[in-house]
Structures are given as structure tokens and as C-alpha cells.
Image (cartoon, rainbow over all chains, first blue to last red; front, side, top):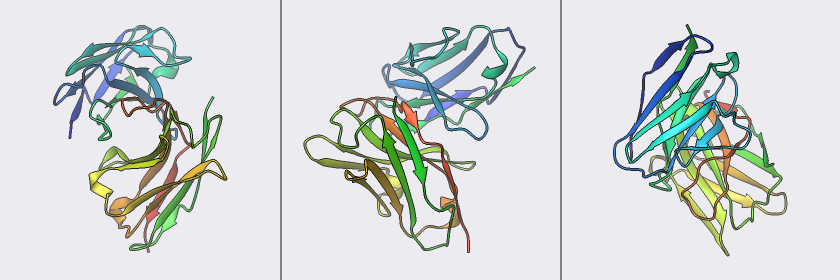
Amino acid sequence: EIVMTQSPATLSVSPGERATLSCRASQSVSSNLAWYQQKPGQAPRLLIYGASTRATGIPARFSGSGSGTEFTLTISSLQSEDFAVYYCQQYNNWPLYTFGQGTKLEIK
Amino acid sequence: QVQLQQSGPGLVKPSQTLSLTCAISGDSVSSNSAAWNWIRQSPSRGLEWLGRTYYRSKWYNDYAVSVKSRITINPDTSKNQFSLQLNSVTPEDTAVYYCASQGCSGGSCSFGYWGQGTLVTVSS
């Protein structure tokens, strides 16, 4: 099983500032990585797939980068609606899909 | 736009069977370029993929090792939906259960659409 490790567990950032979230895979997942956003009481929402491709309707302030074992989600200028929990997920080793434990993005 | 609507009981007794259904609109459960998944989320286990069903000239299933002996996912083409059955549940199976779709013909793709989630509590 590929273990996905996210850091930090909690990130405190002020609105308008940039947020950088990290995800590391225990072995290479190529670019087969997705990022999801989850708000309280809601299902996860797909933000990024293929490590860097925004899903339909996702604002341009969200960007993903990386390949292999190291990945980054960047939110360029935080809006109030962006404060949520973010998960990475690998789909390289299918069908043994695995998720990271999440990074909570909170208002500073 | 795919929409997934979940239904099923929120309380199951230990040793009994958890059963949930996910109704699909905007796509077909028999699509050759989609797969239909169940994922659960709990504080102790995080997001955990459970299994999927998909049609590629015939029906296939994939299941997570952790639940393989207890899980069944079935398509229902007459109602355009799919279901989850998890047998012999224990309190450790208490979680929010989600159905989710994948929009690719292989397995190497993300979960593009999700159901609303169902909190299932295992308790007597």
C-alpha cells in the first residue's frame, strides 16, 4: 500500500495570503495524484487531478505541482471560502487507492 | 454533470449487514468509461476506499483488502444505481459512507463526483 503523508496537519494563513500544502508518497505515483477540498458536513470536492490539472469550475488561484513522490497544492490568494480541509490521493497503484490524512487550512 | 444520491439506514446493529444505495443521474452505471465506488471516512481511519464496480463488456469488481471478505458492490441497471453491502459489521465500521464516480476507462483516475454521504453508526 502506498502511504500518503500530508504536511502540515494544520496551516494558519490570513485571507489574501498564499497557502502552500505538501503531500508526499511512500513510493512514486508518477503524476497520478489528486487534491480534494472538504468543508464541514460536505463530501470532498475534486480540485486537481493529474497533479496539476484543475477540475471543471475550479478557480485559477488553485494550482498543483510535483511528480513522483513530492507534491504541492498552492492557493495563491486565500478567499474566505477556501478555509477547509485538503486531502491528496494517489491513483497510480490502482485499485488500491489511498488518501493522505488531510491538512486543515484555518484563518490566522 | 453526474449526480449521485445516496440512501440507506443510518443505524445498524453489530454483526448485521450495512446496506446503502447510490442512484446515478447524468451517466449510466453500465458506462464503459466510468467506475462506481464506495469510500468511507472516520476519525480513526480517515478516507478509506472500499471498492468499486464497473462495466467493460462484462461486470467487474475491485475491493480493498481490509474488507474483501465482507463486502459486495452490485450494479442495478434497471434503476441506474449501485449498492454496497458490508456484512458482520462492528463498531469500527461506524463512519460516513460516500459513493463516488471515476470517469475513465482504466483505473488510473480520480474521484470526480461524490454522493452527499451517509453517517452509519454501528450500535446495539
